[in-house]
Structures are given as C-alpha cells and as structure tokens.
Image 1 (cartoon, rainbow, N blue to C red):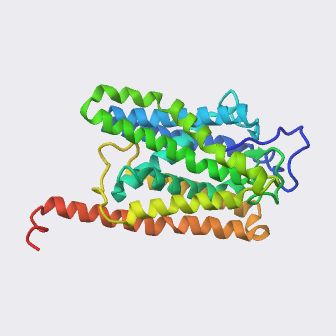
Image 2 (image 1 turned 60 degrees about the vertical axis):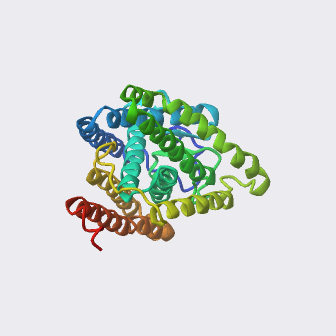
Image 3 (image 1 turned 45 degrees about the vertical axis):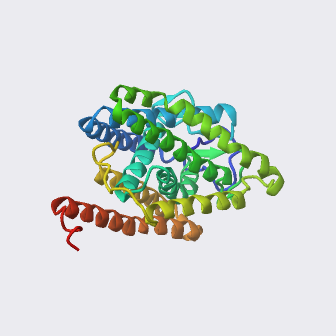
Length: 331
C-alpha cells in the first residue's frame, strides 16, 4: 500500500493521481471506517483472550513497520499528504487495514481446517485476492503512487513486485504468529512473544524479496515488470493453498477460540473493501475506460461467495460432529 505524489509535484504517471485534491473526504472516510472496524475487532479479540488481542496489535504494528521500512529502504512509493493521522511516512489507517486483512485471512483459513504447515499459504492467497482487486483503483484515486511506474506499466500502473511482496508479507506474519500459538499453548507466558513478531516477519519479507530483486532486471527490466516471476510464485502459493484447503488430512475447522477476528467480521471487512473500491471505480469512470479492472474486481468479489459456502459447510459439519460424536463410529 503506497503513497501519492504531493499536489504541487508534477511527476505523477499519466492517467494516474489527478483525483487526490477533489476526494479529500475519502481519506477521512477510510480512516474513520478502518478505525471502527479495528476497534470492534480488538474488543472481540480481547474477549477471546490475551493472545488474539496481542496478535491483532502486532499485525497493526507490522503493517506500519513494513510500510515505513519499505519506503525508507526501497523508496519506490509514497503516500498522499491528505491522510490525517500518520506515523512518519505511514498513515495509521494503512497499519490498521493490514491488521484487518491479515487477521481476516487467518480466521477464514482456520475455519477451513487448514493445517499449520499450509495455513500461511492460504492466508497469503486470501490476502492478495483483495490487492489484485483494489490496488490499480487506489492509485487512480490518489491514495498512493509508485515512483517511476506509468499507468500502462506493470499491472495497470502497479508493479509486479508489489504483488510478489504481498504474498510474503502475509506468509511471514502468519508463519511466525502460528508458531507462537503453538509454543504458547503449553506455556501461556510465551504469548507475549507475539509482540516481537513484526521484526522477524519484516526480516523474512526482506529475504524473500531477494530472488525477485535479482531476477527482475534480467527477466523483465521494464518499469513495474516481473509479472512472469510473480505468476510463477503465485501458482506455487495457490497450489500449496489448494492442497492445504482441499487435500487430505485437514485439521479441525475451528479457530474461534484463538482467532484475532470474528468470522463474520472477517468476511464483512473483505466485502466492505471490495464494495468501497468498486464504488470508487464506478464514480471515477474506470468501469468503462478500464473494463479489465472491473472484471477482476467483480471476480474477486464473487469468489467470496463460494469461499463463504465452503467455510459454512465445514463449520456445520464440525458442529454436527460435536453434537453427535458417535455418528461417525456407527457408519
């Protein structure tokens, strides 16, 4: 999630970023809405226990750390000045949104009964399905911009490296957080380790970026290029996620006791993000000028329906099994 050029700068890519001055209320709407969702999520997480609450707080911290760190290290993007609350270069709402996206993905994965070794891959696919739907719209709203990337470069102005990074952002945080869950199950005092997760997760992210950084100039040196590298990685993640979600030896579909997010709030957050950017697309006229973006956004939104059906089906099966534990034995 990135930053737009200031209103007095003149280097934005052609066709990207002319809307920031006329849409200032949008920034406030996003910040208030994300804050409401986050406070509700934090309250519900705290009711479930200390670790879910610590996970949510650390997810928000991780979001701010990676945004600040990425801008300082790589300097490939920056945010608009219109955001009201920021921590140096990173708007607070971005950290909160990262937390909601990652927490929602982890809750849905747990409800699917995915075992821990595959769960981070499912989390990553769920998270990036949102970014694929909204990132190209967001830069045209003026929420953030990419330096040196034109509106026709990469994926409609979004560099391939962004999508590649999204996979490992979620994977790193999920992998370490799920490890903390395991070690803290027998020793609750270790739950406080969760607050340290953002730092090693960011280090894992940086390490994961090395292959793309090395191969991108060789395979596709164009601005924003590297879509082939992203697709290869994405296919691997989808394969691992598919095996974890639909393969044999799945775990118990649950997670309600340890999840950061209530399942309804997890889906509600995802739907709200989809609908907000779909509405923005229509208002900006992108539905007619960039129909591919509309198709992708609608497909990602539509995918939430079968996802919800599968989740509910597995939860219903588990509920029935708990209610009648002898049913399977008598078959």
